[in-house]
Length: 217
Image (cartoon, rainbow, N blue to C red; front, side, top):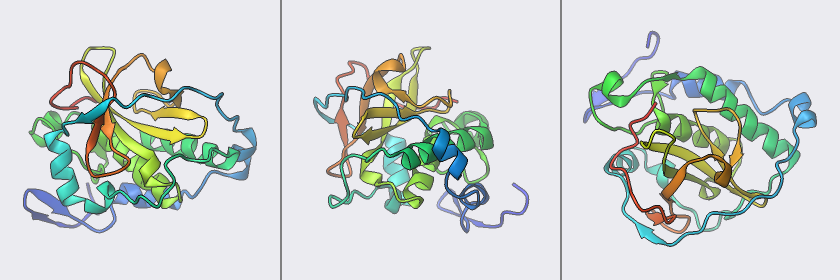
């Protein structure tokens, strides 16, 4: 994108804070009006972890390049205390990122099957949207440990990435296909696996078929 300077290192661009992240951070937390209007979601069930799972190759590469984004701090809360202000911030970040990033597959964008990053140039596919949302919410003070990248099978039968927020009102999903933040069991997706809360690893959510990529707009 114009105005963004950097240099390529190991096939990646090394830049200052990406312009998209900077712009979204500059927007600040949810306004007082947003907070007043926010209605907390009804309590929802939590997804059941059934064992360990194999991570995606693209996630492993992402963690090598963005170690801080994958770090697990066991001292952080395992669940988000969902106050009206926190909920308003979640809804606001979800909508802002969905509006701000141009949806494009990694093959169309970068010429590779699957790559995870923070949408540094303003374009990305499903996992890039969710990683940026987590980055912004963590900057706002939410515990990263309670925000887990999650692999699902979507309505087209394709691999897709969403962000699961583990809260005291159940497991909620942030998605680039909708700006509605939904309980996981109301998304219509088949949940396959997500990042562990206890280690830099993945856990199974009981889905029978695991996609090799999440190259989905």
